Length: 338
Image (cartoon, rainbow, N blue to C red; front, top):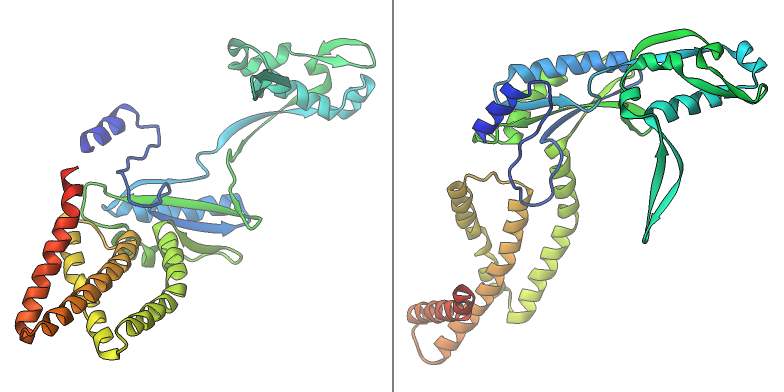
């Protein structure tokens, strides 16, 4: 992946790209997103430039970009309303001619089985790439019932730069600066954001402008908030069910005291695989607690059976653990063979 990144940087320096590994759970966006919300596009780009400078200065930030992209140059004909009125031409007619000549205009639908595809009319590729072809364009005049030169309804052209994409949130302009940690490094997105966040939040924003964080910080927070809202009630029901199973609080507490021991296995697995403790790991840990409760219930039940057969408590615990382990392996052996 490092060689591929170097190849793209050297061969295609003008493109934006993103390399990503296969992820567990939902993904798709940038790991770190700083959203600037305000009204003036120029001010938003100025603030975004300061944020990107901070990200570029950090050696752990890669693939830095924003979602508004670079401004594009626009050539707009100046509509001569008084002259166009003499020919019965409106500004809408001029817009339709320009759209059909360059972007293309839908003039109908083509049915392909059960699929409807638009029929788009526009100039050939060779005529669309040269803006000077506007000088030779013709427009239909209802008053004269003939085509007239396009220049007769315009008075020059206005050239300006404009934003090709303007993203809005809650009807307000929002510019998002994105970055990702090094895919080949050991640093997580949370560590990188913890380092960048104080510097970015120290930027003085003009009145009416705000900063909010998205990316993994937002998605993980939303997921954990939704999860923890219902988790206490679920664990309470599980604890009550455990008490009803044993008809005693002591045995239920013994079973539940085995749940924290799952941290040993979870920590070992994450360290061995060099995986951060994210939301998916948290979800797996909570699921593992249910498996531990089930195994604890089975183990206590088997211990009780062994003690009723006349064995001493210590031997009953050892023999019960051995029986449960053998049963566990025997039930899963066919799956391993498959």
